[in-house]
Length: 193
Image (cartoon, rainbow, N blue to C red):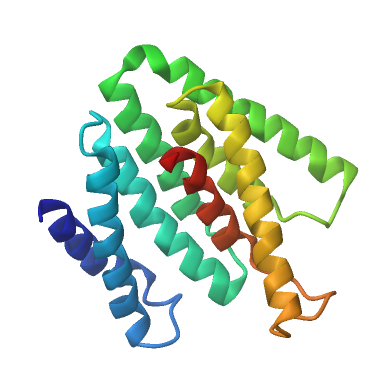
């Protein structure tokens, strides 16, 4: 019940900060319902984890980023940075010895992302790369194997979302698909396993 209240409280705070991004009044209400549900799921899955607040933070900022990206094809850097910094601060305060691994995971993802940007210019949005960098500490909390699984799963889910949008006729084969929602959904799968 407490985490559901966290989700509802966060909704009010989030709604004030993202109203300029959301074109309709009902979107914050829908986000509130999703956040409340996610807060319950986070409590059920991660309730015994001393870093529970990090998982809750991932849920809250992830919903905001997915909403903004699906509506505007943008992943605002302040929100992506808050996802990264919030995770590092919470995980680092729970287990300071894990902090080097978490930062290293983000650095590795950033280096690989920059390499992909150089090899395939214009094919991958830099905001998507920065989102993966911000997700890396959450995966690294469980170990390097989860970092690899997270990157692979996030891209597989993104591909499935894009294929579904194209097959359903929502987007044409050459249209841009917002990568954030698929990457964020895929990011959760190895964490919940």
